[in-house]
Image (cartoon, rainbow, N blue to C red; front, side, top):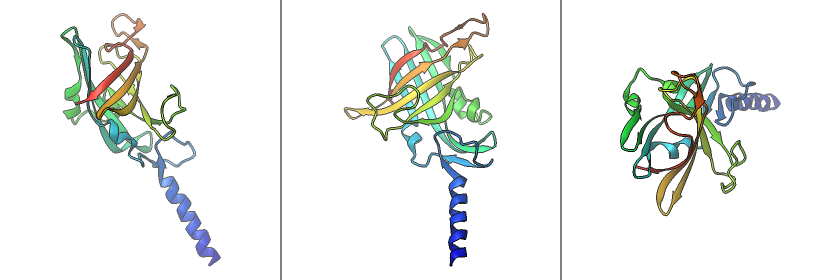
Amino acid sequence: MKHIFILFSIISCLSCKAQSPLFMADPELPAGTYYKDMNNDMDKFVGTWKWDNGNSSWTITLEKVEYFLIGGYYRDILIGEYQYIENGDLIINTLPLLNDSSVQGFEHYIAGSLILHKFHPLPCEDCTTDERRVQLFFNDPQKSYQSGRLWLRHRIISGVEQLDARLYGEIKSVDTGAFGDGTVPNGEYTLIKQ
């Protein structure tokens, strides 16, 4: 009976390492580990979202990809693309890339898998202890030297789904080599689900 218990304990430990919650990668877990979005925290971010101030708008579309292989590990990730219009002029539109099967995973201009809790970087003072946000990479094809970061918080206010977004990155211009905002200006945005 003791041997059965030990065998059961070993199998339980191995199965725990087979799937790990999707917060931060654990270097002690073996290659092939699947960092799964076990609580479906990413699902609420999926969809098309739009910020609009009358003259300018920013639309992002996010999709969830399960079991994506990167660096020897499998992860559930969010991928996305965006369109930015400023003063009525189309500045950038990468949305068609979501339908391009040759673009995979982190090749998308928005991608990532880091799920944040209340006390992660950019602490959320008014978040509940069980509320989850995401941090994604945000790349700019027109100024593509470094990537920015996009932090998203999902909320429902008066029955309306919204993403509170904070975009930050020092993007190096391909043309001038100078660092600055990307094509979409750094800042805080409220995007409404479409």
